[in-house]
Image 1 (tube, rainbow, N blue to C red):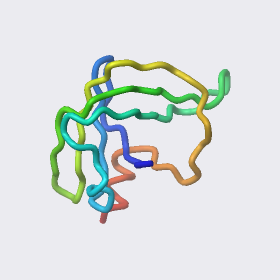
Image 2 (cartoon, helix red, strand yellow):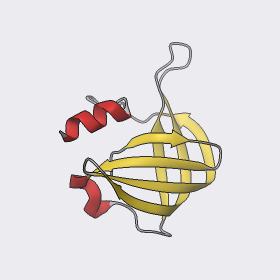
Image 3 (cartoon, rainbow, N blue to C red):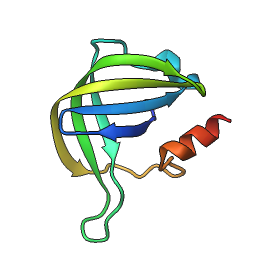
Image 4 (cartoon, rainbow, N blue to C red):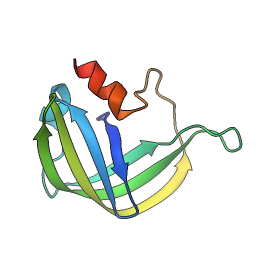
Length: 100
């Protein structure tokens, strides 16, 4: 399992950041993957995630030791989150701070 930070999401695509330590395991261009994006908790319906089947369409290294991967989403659905990860990174800024 890879753990990254969702930098941007739309109906048709997803941009994910990984730190350089995970870069060796980043999906390759054209690779079909299954992604699970944890969503913020809501007191009305609990912890949910967005499950996606997607293809990596762009892989790039950026300043600060991050690798970005853009995915084209083919299929998505909401479902209950299997587990909440303790210590999960909640923002891009928090993720970038961990790299310093």
